[in-house]
Amino acid sequence: MSFFRRAPSLRAPFLRASQAIRSYVRSAPGTYLWLAALFVTTVAMHHMSPEFEDEFLRQRSTNIHELSRNPVRVLISSAFWIDGSSWLPYAVLYSLFHATAERWLGTWRWLAVAALAHVLATLISEGVLALAIHHGAAPRSSVNTLDVGVSYALAGVVAVLTYWVPKPWRYGYVLIVLAVYGTPLVTGRTFTDLGHFTSVLIGLACFPLTRDAVPTAPWALRRSRRS
Image 1 (spheres, rainbow, N blue to C red):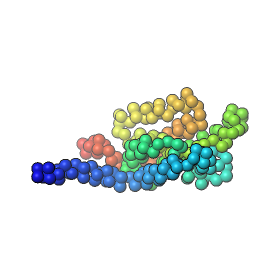
Image 2: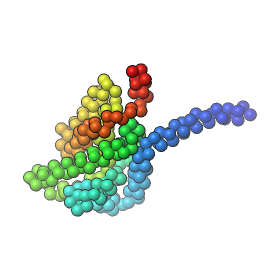
Image 3: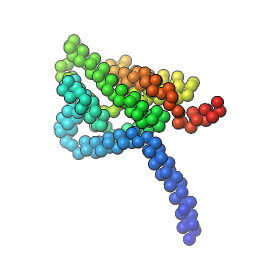
Image 4: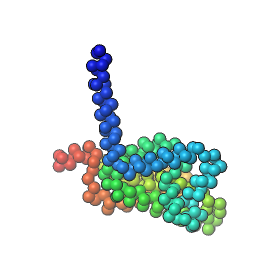
């Protein structure tokens, strides 16, 4: 009988945790709808043969060949596939960065930052690759390179969160972001490294979208109450 008396108290923490998770997901609907779509496409991809998967993703890739034929279609479709990666790390990164930015900026401004980073970084990096091919610095086969994924949008959102972090921690945060995305550009110098660093610069340039955003982080709220 004592077990049954304790059962409600044992269930209470789980109920509170479940309610907190549901509340957090509802506070960032765009993030978790996107993440759900990525889960579905990742499961679908794991049921493809390697040969079919490669061709399937290449047709949805933002490479030079596909951008010259169907730019709008591939810019949209490429944001819903992960190139052979596990879904779980993206669930963690989306919850840490995308959800935070969406709760802070609101769905439409968060989506604007993500879309600008994804589209502009893709066009700039592929444009640089096209110039490299034209001048013989990259092989002609690079026009069909595989380039899908959500990392450019993620990098842009990671960067715009610089303005969410209160001073003086903001300066350390932006230095870490620049180092994380800038080091591969210096050491690797691939077009995707350029795309990631360009996304960071685009995210930082989105400062006007953050001016009247109200921070939702507990530390920021505590600070505003004291002021």
